[in-house]
Image (tube, rainbow, N blue to C red; front, side, top):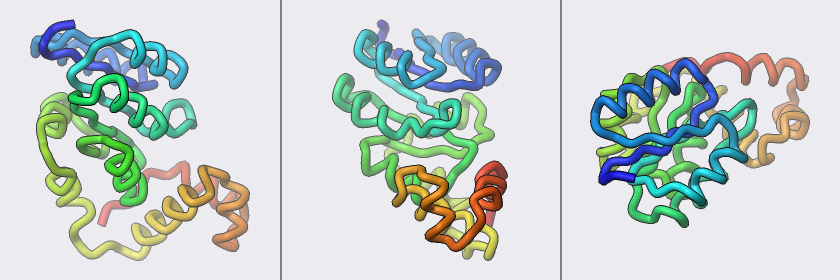
Length: 178
């Protein structure tokens, strides 16, 4: 691949095709995976300078891919992209080796800027540095407990003293801002 090559790991086909075209117009060679097994194959067989990884791939967390990306392309820029932003997942993504974290919706320019940023702070400023609402604090706490339970919804519901279906409904909603 060229000096600018992008590995896109995104399960939303429409969003992915828009991003692929937009990055190709900006001179990037692109490869695209829609699921974790395909992503693993592309990571092992493709040379890339940049990677954009959707956090939630068909209901599965893609955090496990970050160390793999780092292993195969240590100098690459890795951006975790998600529609379900939380402080817990942002911190975990950065700890695992992502360079930055960006909440959806995001356009190509925002994604490219986040790929070039050196710090997560700039992408978290508007959302996470103001005092949080009670609903946002609840979302963050749920995400933290869910992460501690490795995504086990039943155990998370027990620890939160919440009915499993109630927790599932809360998780299906997008996080509230502020």
